[in-house]
Image (cartoon, rainbow, N blue to C red; front, side, top):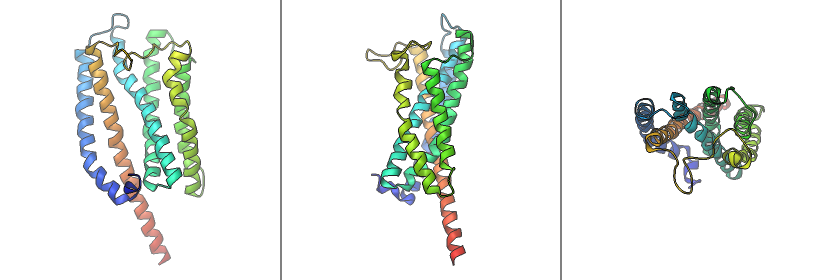
Length: 240
């Protein structure tokens, strides 16, 4: 499977089919999710209308972790098998994941102010998500820190693989330490503890964010592969 998509032509052929699907799913699910979040879901009995921030914040936090796992897996494939397309996928994922992480931090701060009375607290969940944001930034800086691109890609890949240990810390921080965040209420062994009127827009936004990630990823990887072709062509012309 890895070897098959190591061929950029095959990869481009695949994403040319998937990109329109990702675009349509993104528009439909985020549109429906925002509609249900704003007009169909009720205000919370404790948080009132501020609970609507959840529909942006929670899926963004999920995607922050999802993207980082994708980044680490792609980096591992690129590092072990010297898979060029996997390296481009990792490089393209980093800024997308960083944006989702920033969105989670920003909306969490906006939501936390009326609920907790402060914009920020150094509890385990917030601190570990902030570390995740710095890991994304560190990956991008390290990738471009060397004159030789291969060395930068290798160093950034190692950082992303080591940093993946932060993902379970984020996930289980509310269970391991005393934090202001509530425990998991959607993914539970005995089923979600969220009312369907709130769960529906939450899941719609989660699907929409996931589709948005892949839509942007396909655009970025296509641009990177085309840029590589142009660079290779210029090198050949210069050598000729």
